[in-house]
Amino acid sequence: FFLTEPKTMLSRRFAPAIALAKTGRARMSMQWKSPAVATPSVEELSKFAKARGMNASDAELTELRAAMKGFLASFTRVEELKAPKLAVKYPRVPGHQVPESENELGAWYVKTSIKGAATGPLAGKRLALKDNVCVAGVQMMNGSRMLEGYTPDEDATIVTRLLDAGAEIAGKACCEDLCLSGGSHTSAKAPVRNPHDKTRHAGGSSG
Figure 1 (tube, rainbow, N blue to C red):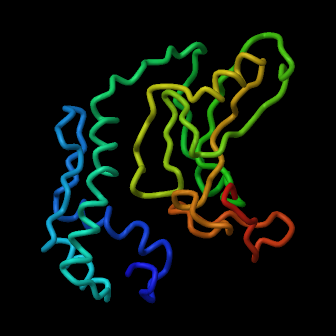
Figure 2: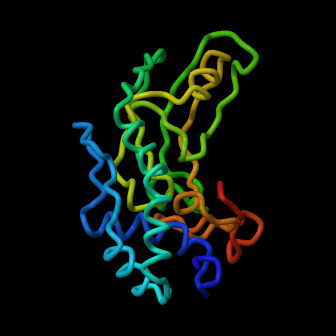
């Protein structure tokens, strides 16, 4: 019944997760509670559906609930796994968010300086990473207020490989809100402007 309703694809895709979070049933924590996400009751599913203009019978919702159990069990399994801790190989400073006076086009989220190996194919190259890549000790927002203030404590594999190859990471480039746009106007910080015409956007999702 979801496919026949006049809702946008994104609304249908994220509505159940948002609704579960709002009712407090999404219990994700570092204490590894089980289940990580509780299966909603038929009554709750009916409430969620009606709130979004969807019509579904109890039989349909019962079938949907049964189908959800296996999917939600995967969240519990992931919560139970012990995450590996990757070593941070290169020293760095936390960096700083770039004020508007120094960020005319809105393209920077954070500036920093993380120097990699002294030699390598990327030696002498300075790079900006898209702000959906984890860099230990450097803020990451992914364009969304939901992640504002989050600071990873590990480097993504691509970060380590770039630094091993001699690159210097100069900062993080602004990206769309959760990287869900092909424009450059949905970032919670500011739109990224086109350097050739500042009245236009630069395109996305990397801005």
